[in-house]
Length: 334
Image 1: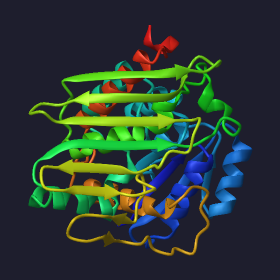
Image 2: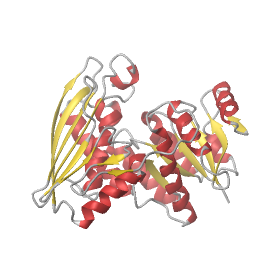
Image 3: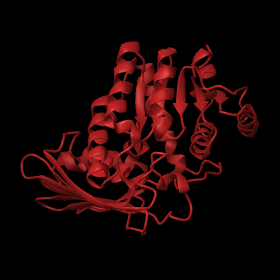
Image 4: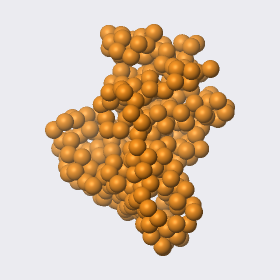
């Protein structure tokens, strides 16, 4: 039986996610409903993608008996409110990253998921790319010896493109918006272990959020990680894992990669040509995340081993430490 998806929010990332689902067999994935704040937007989205039902209220997804899981593509400031309501309505959820705006909300989302006994996963799609799986395999094989240093960066000059990213009122700031990618990469390599200490700083913009940051994370056994993120410059957008015997490199785009460079040679896994149009780079790779969700649901899992609740909380704690040390405090933090 196909996994039946309900889509919450008819924005750009939802468009790419549904386009990816449409590239998968209908015997495995079906989009049966979409909900938006405007019924007109929902109907337009439904018409574009051939979706049967369109709703003007997010909670209609929770009430629809034909929906197995809700994909939440709304802005992250709304994730906790929407996500907890949908889960209390009895539905499983895949919620876009970052899961929430702060640690307090992240803990609440996890609490409700456990209380309701529903599946919940933060949509860190990077984790399920073949390159990430190969990276993990080569680290565990001992190819580069003991991991000692992880370096990851992500920077795009978006100052004139995305006003929402640059305002405290909308939960903006570079750490939440794109810093989450190098942060989750470091956590992935470190096996989800919590850092002993986070030392960070950044520059504030006029909107009351940080627009560039640098952070050092100290881990047990002499391990260290370096993270950089910026809205002001185009960084290399790559990641390095440095071991006692060599280095693994994930080149640009490190958040949705097709290549891994290592001492034993380059691993390449090109993304499939789905024949669909996407808004964001390499969004056809969302199929890997969707297939992981289906696998978890079929096996009766309430969280994915690839992105468990505990690691969503660890990532949230690192994000909060970096942004608050950089001077960004949201009303929701108080």
